[in-house]
Length: 367
Image (cartoon, rainbow, N blue to C red; front, side, top):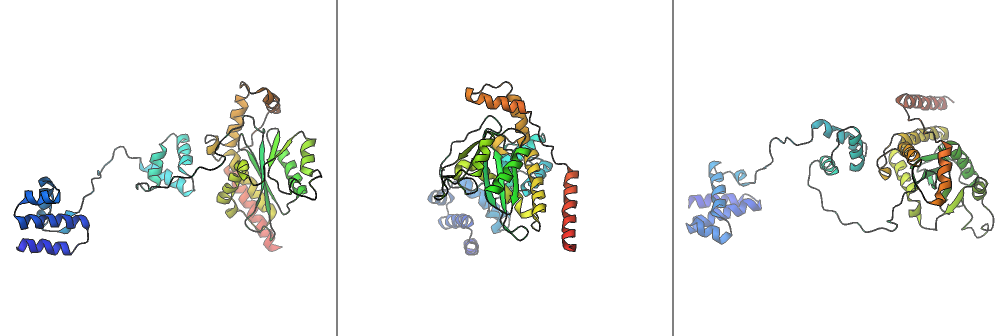
């Protein structure tokens, strides 16, 4: 009876369900004076009973002895090394995803599977169950074979004033190589669009055949009931240079998905660190970001290569690749233009850019 009372007191002092079940099994066996009968009534084996009874008695009737112990091995010879885990954590702090990290580790000759990278990034915890995502419209993905075959262009409102005024960032991106160019202005009209397009022609390392935009007033008069019969200056500019101006249907931004996705990259990586005291300093910082984007950043949409690497790959492949007859003139024009990739931004270039930015800030404060 003393042992029964002792077990009953232990059962009252704990709220752990598993521990209480074991204590109640022990008390039932004492009450019936038959271990086999108690195990049969509760659905346990005699082996289970004696395993936990021996643990409890050997520990001096401590409740902690009735809790499950970790079966995790003290050493794991196949575990990822601490040095590689440190690289994964370092890349995670830079807000890179598992696919991006997988591609970068492969370049450093220490490739890991994506599941292992996710396991390390999540702190080796069990993944949570997620709801199945609904299918979205425009699921069909496509790739254009020739650089410059079609460029997507759009305008992004800068999320804060630059030099005390509203600012508008013009962005254009190539659908084949993801080569990208951007510049910010204080105005949003067709004249500004023409200025931006002139700079794109000067900076683009390959000929442009088509420009795709939405139906904004800075691109077209299509939705303007007063001026829709007039020819927009952007349309005239494209006709003079033999470039097709393609307009997407109203309200279907998914067709401009590549440039819309690049806006999100700007919000994640550029806008929050760009200078806002002066438009020229903002544009200089944006040019540095574009150099990094085109020459150094890996992009999942093109097989985790940089846009300039993709451009070089297409330049070699198009020398022998067979395309549709209607694309042959574009292929020959591209090969005849001899695209020259931009030079990657070095550490010295970044230091010079930082010094120039600090000098402009000091001169602005003095003035």
